[in-house]
Length: 447
Image 1 (cartoon, rainbow, N blue to C red):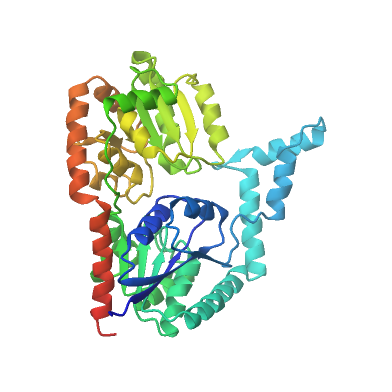
Image 2 (cartoon, rainbow, N blue to C red):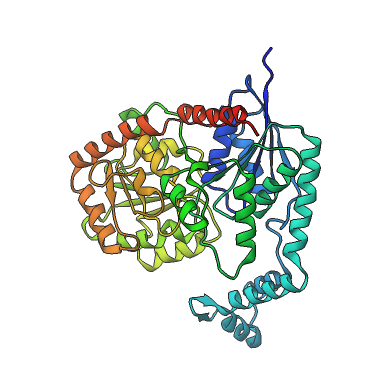
């Protein structure tokens, strides 16, 4: 009987659970368990735990680590501010304090500036970062000594992003694990000339991490230009999706009725975490003001959750779009929702890998409007399977939405082209094979 390759997976996460977690679950669920023996670890994170219960195979156990810093832990400054913000009485002093704290200065509230300065000061005085790094190093040292493994695979968000994972790469090497892989999903930060840790982590990770997987070619190039990692060690593997049978016309009608949508109204879709300004919700909302003048019944479905939902709902009311924008929160039926829409809109700004929402729209044979943020334009070819607009350009976004709404034949042509591209580039089984090939190549190398 062939000996199985033992792989320890660690997925580091912040307080937002997005495409990096989706990639992690798909990889773990699809890997060949006849060939690989796996252990799965992540930080203590109740949101991740909820998604794991929904999406992770029952035969795989997720182990939760007590890494630092502790996620979702509020500092007393935050608790005090929230109490002041929630105050319902008539005390004028408290109202004046709240007004001052919310006053905008250089793009941020006074409260955010005070919190930033306070946290920085406390972190410096208490050596918080150093203590956290030591804690994480000891934690992973115990982990790697206990689990005898062949490969360590760390799933990161951006870079450097989750420092505990970078510590794990270094500790793994000195515990005898010479084959390590890191996947990144968002654009890396540029090195700061004054931040010594940037140079230290880059040097050590570059030396001890044998492979880096990026989810777009843009990320691969940026890891080289921004952080000086060798292109020879970086491989682009697009995230994939399983193909699913598309809805029939009757099923589309039933789904629209289930969501209380009129059958003939044009429907747009944006799917993203509501806390991330880089997803472009506010820009899309503003463009709908003009779109509505020609299509008064236009519907935008907003899928996703986040603390900023209240702000976006207020923006909807400000723009008088209460009858046009529907918040659906987190959905497990995103495939079905893509089947009933006319256009998927991903108006991203700033850093991105390749959003899953684009691939979900391509799979459903829908045209996509997006920007050139990150790797978005690696998935959408302008005027072929969608339209690419400049970032933050409300006028051009409005124009492209109207262009597609006005031309059903164009939408169908672009949707069909997107479907072909999905089948060629983004089928999940093909991506799993690429990952397994990387594991096998590492095992074949002399360390």
